[in-house]
Amino acid sequence: MEDIIMAMLKDASTKDFGQTEVGKSRELYLDTVAQEALERSGKCPHLKGTVLEILYRDKLNMDIGNRLAGNTTRLTKNTKSIGPDLVTLNDGKVVGRYQLKDSTSSGGISQLGKRLKNGQYRMDTLAGTVETKAKYDSVNPSTKLMQSTGISSETTARVADNAGVNAPGNSLAANLRDAGRQTVNAVGIATAATAIIVAAQSAYAWRKGSITGADALKNVATTTARSSATTGVQNGTALALKEGGKMIAKKTGSESLRRVVGSASGTAVVFSLAEQAVNTVQLVRGKINKAEYGSKTLQNAGGTGGALAGMKCGAIIGTAIAPGVGTAIGSGVGALVGGLGGRFGVKKLLKRFC
View (cartoon, rainbow, N blue to C red):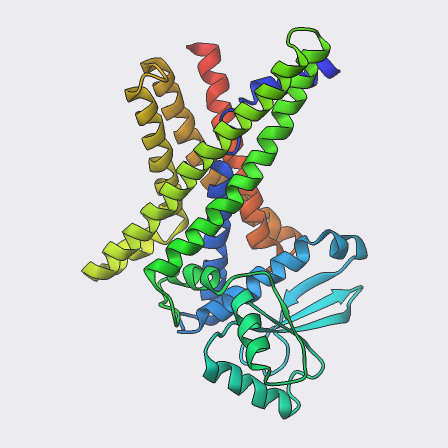
């Protein structure tokens, strides 16, 4: 059994594992969030508030403690209600109420303070973006505590911008900062996954006597470092291309271009271009030959197609399991599984027939 597992891990091609698929699936998930936000609130100036609600709902539903407790968090039905934005249910009973805030202006915080003093939200847990909580704590307009969602206002603004809405305070610089933040997260996840797989492979080889302990440690360190660097370059380039495309669309007034660039299809294209650019540089520098370049190109196409198909299938499955709650989460998971599956499927076919 151990030999079979190791053979599967080796075939997984750890050099390519997650280098683009992790970041791509995360961005495709955010595209799904943007679409859900538009369907819920329309193209309004404060769409980023709805984006925050969806992101925090999904974050609470992915929390292992909530899953074990049987808690499910949902958006409230009335988008214009003065009541909670989210409610957490357990066996049909409300066990949590959340009022979410995404405002960093002095006026917005002052208005919130007045509402709290008038008794609004007294039954709700008050939660805000990282920046909103920092502003709220510095102004201290009320004795009611605000907790952090762990989500940045720059993330909610960038997602709203992807949907074609210029959120208050949104800028290219803020979007690029958030793109950098998402890239760091992708690097962390992909690097951890690669390290686990390579460590298992190296430990197995060491036990079989084919490499020394020192070589095993070196293999883990060098492969992980290489994966981390490649992931950072590919994800950073892809998101920079996406922001560049949106900027051109804004400058030229092309609404159709902006819709495409900010969509899931646009995300798939920029990630594909970024990966192809890295492979081209490797070819020019002689690190891979033409046959390997052709193989990587086809794997890239397979990963892109697989991610888009997986996103759609995941959204359908997620919606069937938990309408509204599971759609965005299912799309993100589906994109990751579909992207990896498409990439490895193409690789299998190439090995068999080429």
